[in-house]
Length: 110
Image (cartoon, rainbow, N blue to C red):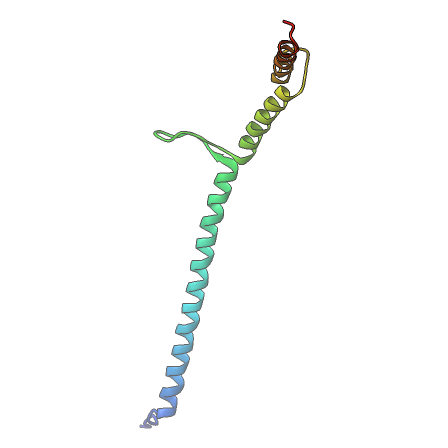
């Protein structure tokens, strides 16, 4: 019978180095996967905020970004409407009327 040659210290060191390299590579891949999963979770939150969320039991609906921007534009348009004269219905017209009345009072006539 032939006997196998004994394992040398160099072979043990080589296998230990290879095992260490494989473990280090596995750890690096694991860290990369964890980072990708964290970023994907954050991107999912961004998409939810952008699109909005429908109402569900116990939680009110959250409008998306575009819906909120539309509401802001409506409010700005309503404020802008009040800043320009339009024949009597705007805040600008009311200020002009008060100014004219005040000028008449100051000038001595009512």
